[in-house]
Length: 275
Image (tube, rainbow, N blue to C red):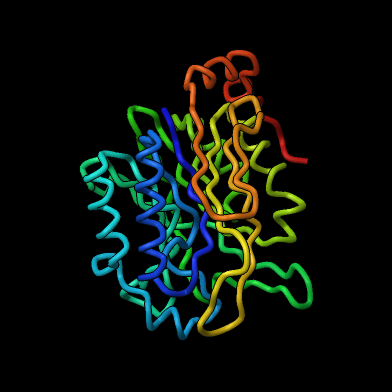
């Protein structure tokens, strides 16, 4: 399988972002990718809830989702929209939702981000994702060319039981699209991604947002970049650096079986009483 991780610097303008993403998806397919992945909040990076309320849509009316479903069908590729920010339709909070789109343009799986990014990194960098977004409550497996893919989003990365559960349910690839903060990204991004791959014996594919994001309203966000693909032994296969672009990686799925045979941690766990 040849995968492509798209690294983006999305603005708060969904239409502008659609033009950018469509072009990069085309480039990835022309380079031979059959599975293309985009980062978290591909359609709109914004810190302004007012602006989001003006430019976001419910799933059924989202123009990026509709357009990229057509692109996937035309190019005959699997496409993971790492996440779109969407209106929920039944409450004021939004939804942070991944979409796995088939080569026929069908929505093959949906996943709503479970773990909300509610953190105080410093006095000037505070996030309360749960104020604006409704959390999901269901782990989701998709299937790409016969290979089960565990769907997660960004802050989920810090909760290893989710990834172990997905692997034990059959996942051989873990998708972790993100918009990681620069401070936590520098300290933890690579270490956590490699750990999730090693713990589960899965390939990890983590397309990321990068740079300073243009904003027409509210403060600008900064994100870490460094989209990473990691093999089941914990080796880094590609690093997207700090600029937008397409990062290609070949996945030899037999490496999943090899890693799990060498270190069978998914099947050798022991139960114990709590301390």
